[in-house]
Length: 156
Image 1 (cartoon, rainbow, N blue to C red):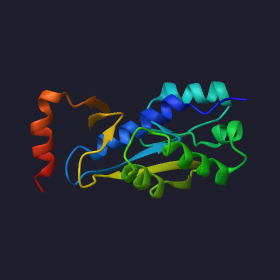
Image 2 (image 1 turned 180 degrees about the vertical axis):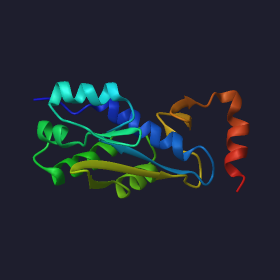
Image 3 (image 1 turned 90 degrees about the vertical axis):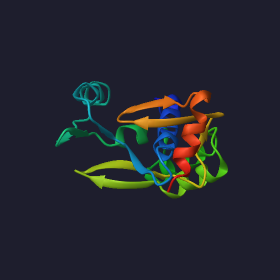
Image 4 (image 1 turned 180 degrees about the horizontal axis):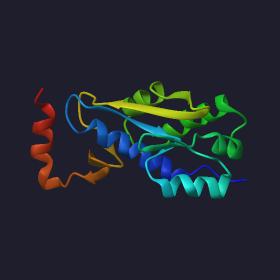
């Protein structure tokens, strides 16, 4: 059986913190079970024999192939996601926000996990560092940019 992809999960949580840090009023989503690259959809078909549903520029592959490999059912999968959020190197406030905002929706007959994020009263920290997201890139805020980062964050 396949194991939960801890690295991808950690990158996803890092991405949520980076999206929240873009400004004092940022919000955004990370969708699991959706890819924007055909090669990723093809890889899922090769490994799991799952056909993706193309929608605009996205491929909906769902998470069903992952649930069966380490969770009993969708509810167990959901519980495991919340447990894993609690182990991430983020604040308790961020853990609470991410845990409360998880939704599992059925789209094109596939289960997709949607994580919502929004900025908190202060920038979110991930493993003692600050990150922002621009387009599809997540980048660390270097210490010399902290003054601008905190200043821009506080402008409402």
